[in-house]
Image 1 (cartoon, rainbow, N blue to C red):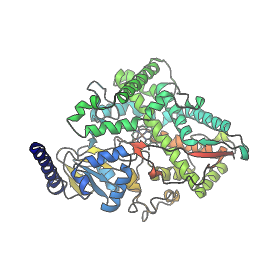
Image 2: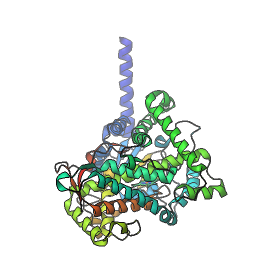
Image 3: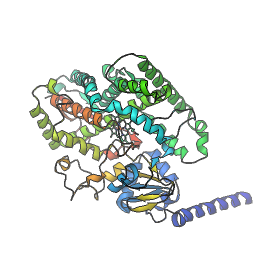
Length: 492
Ligand code: HEM
């Protein structure tokens, strides 16, 4: 009994010392934030697991301003200068690059190969150079007919879901169909074969497992926050999660190997890199496998999320929906003329996409970085080396300091671009700097085409007019836990 009381007392004393150190003596003590979060890492970890981290960070930025200390060693930013300082290049400065935070990107085992998403800068540079070829303007021109043919199938499938008669309109969950479409396209461009989700009207097992990626990553990163327990990761994680990860990786490796074995010039992500690799031998077989499955996921989940969010904003904001439908129907007299190239000049469409990405960013919270040894200045304030830093998109985009009426869907702000009311330096949905999105141009092309084809073919409205809510009410596990988007489709 006495021993238990003594141990309890010692534990409380240790906690008190920990709080006093972190709150009043730590090098980050001058940065504002909630006391519990400044003192311990666990509130952050709990919030990540509850799926409400984006909402908590938004509230903290509302209260404490553009820089908030959200854990003993982590700062969250919401001002434009942070983009440049954390992720960008600082011309003429002696600043070292801020690397990706290994807590999020640590390998599961030492024999796991490096990838384009990994924290190793040298490997990243080598892979980025190689894969840049697959995302050049020429590659996009080559890939366009492939993407257009999937969008054609998508529209045909939706037409077969609705009867065309007002009283017999059917309900379609567009959220699901956007997933089918983007995974089929990504599968074709990365693995050389479609997942056939559109054809079968249901998710392929690879896709179904991939949709749990965010939860797995959140769990792994939480354990990694508590070294040396991360060494026990494989014993701590539920067996079914580990097995699903292994199965998924093996399925992906088999698909990547199958595509690599083909001698073909098909327009996809593989052909241009393969040509480059034949000359430079820059990417090993194992690296191919991991990078191809990253590309499938990175290219599909984000684009599907963006499309679902944009369509939800449109059906909830009928004025914007009418204006966009008008723009598209005035520009084309036949759906066969709607292509990636021919949608490039539609200015309201571009504004709608940008406003959707601002209000509902697919990369919800920032991809964290670590301040290099020796420290550096971020947003005009000194930060010691080893501190975790991130620009967090959802909370930043919802700040009235950054955007007028930040919670409203107003595409016109991207047409007018008034610096008095909207600080566009904070808007970077695809990130910035050497790790910024390699698929940005492709993503815009895909989103333009899908939205233009959809709104040319159909009059879309919510199935239930009461089904209106803010996108941020959904939970996030790295990615959005997306709710259905049930709409009625009628022939335009
Ligand atoms: C709306 C759609 C998309 C959004 C919002 C988006 C957003 C982002 C962001 C914010 C990053 C930066 C991550 C960081 O700073 O660490 C990123 C990186 C990346 N994205 Fe995207 N992305 C989208 C679509 C795509 C597509 C279509 C592809 C490819 C098919 C793709 C492939 C990648 C890859 C490979 C990286 C890592 C780049 C590197 O580290 O060099 N993304 N994306």
